[in-house]
Length: 144
Image (cartoon, rainbow, N blue to C red; front, side, top):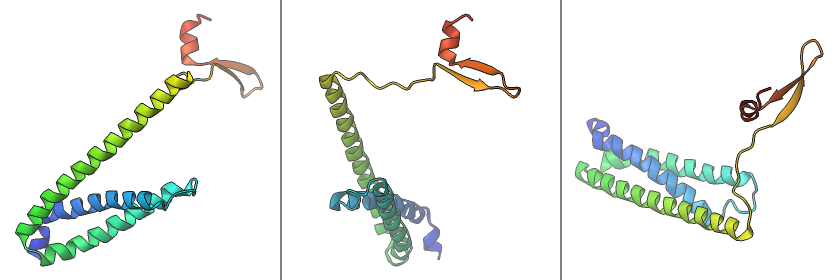
């Protein structure tokens, strides 16, 4: 029982959970489990991630109980390196995807998307009067 509460063991539980959540998110992407599911695709992929993480978390208690402490420490380092690699790959894919989108926008001549604010809208007050409300950007430029 003492073995289950050592700092290396607790780190092992957390690393197993996070690493297998990431593995559980990538597996359905690779096999196409969320393809053509529209809005349900994200939930399916998230469900796979949670399922993998939960099973790995429960299994990590058995692994810690039966495997020597020295191997747990080595596995912690291995899992930490795998997490760093998976983060690097994911970040690289994100940067490449954004770069590709920016190039497509430049080629098609589409302007960069900017968030918009309402310029003017009218509301009805409690006593039935109509009030005009302007956005903060419009109000600062217009002295009225």
